[in-house]
Image (cartoon, rainbow, N blue to C red; front, side, top):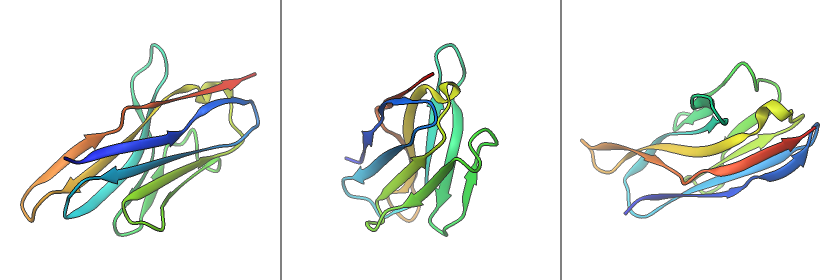
Length: 120
């Protein structure tokens, strides 16, 4: 069974940096897309950053220049490096992956979420 295992997160002061990692475990054919989403208290979930198997990346306007998404040395991992963090970045961050389980089957997966809290 495919699972997304997240690590990182925690409490950081404003202006600080933090990295989140996510690894897809289990058996699958390939990973099409990996992304990080976040949901702040009382707000809708929003896309933070995404990367595709082709290497393209995209970022929310609110994090451009402050975040970098990258695939790890192992192709089943993705990392989100965040810097110049602001209290507004406080949220539960969740890893997402679109995975090909066969040549004709693609499934969406979510991690359990990790809390990022930025203190002012």
